[in-house]
Length: 334
Image 1 (spheres, rainbow, N blue to C red):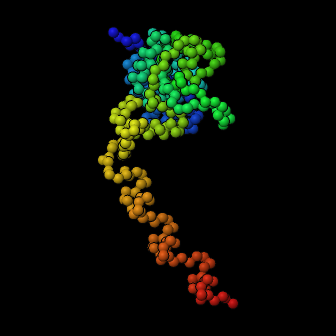
Image 2: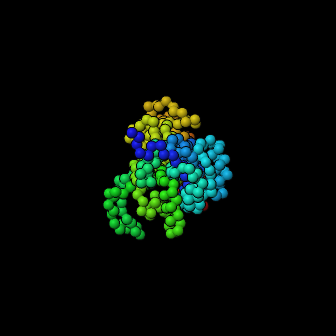
């Protein structure tokens, strides 16, 4: 017996119209590169691998529609139906993308452009969970203590029972999502995701477990984390071996070369850019010998900490012992 939700076909809407102010980069965050490939391309490739995704609509920045189309062609991203001009806010970009979804498809999946570590299997699970109520999202239960803070002071500690951190993808019946957006527009309401718009209609939204690595890259720290994760050989959003995944307790960081190939592991610490290869070159080694620096004397009698040190004559310093005021042979000039 086939499980309910199998065989559903959907169009994925990817809101990518933001400017990424929190990232502080010169280009919008969705165009920043991971291993030479833009975040947006990584994300779209995973969505395209999902069997339930029949096509993809991208809502790009208004002045970057043509350049985004060229970018996706250059990287041969499959299943892209349209690239449309997005809005100033995420909610507006989803609404504009919804306008061009083919009428023959009943389901819509919404996914953030800057969540490249999603897995296609999660898209399938969320879509299957939406089959009965008409809407579903994914997330992770809150594990940390949650406090409400006002003006740098703790106001209350909240009960974390039942609290989840929400991710995307989110799946909806197309007509339900349309009605939710129309109501939000009439009411002047702005939500942080699409599920909350559906909740305002009184509809039920199913929740399925998300992925710990389904990171939303919005800050420079997130980008650093993502680039570290990308150094490990990974499948779509997941590591092939436990010792290759940076979130694993057995993780061993691979040594990289210019081409990304792994070098044979040595018994000592791998040489990194700027790291000395010889033990006597490492500042923490007992055999360390500090290399001569600009302005540092090479001879032991030139080093101020050496017992053989002889201070060089400085401007204004007498060269002869009988000219130095601290010398026993000093003769004060008349």
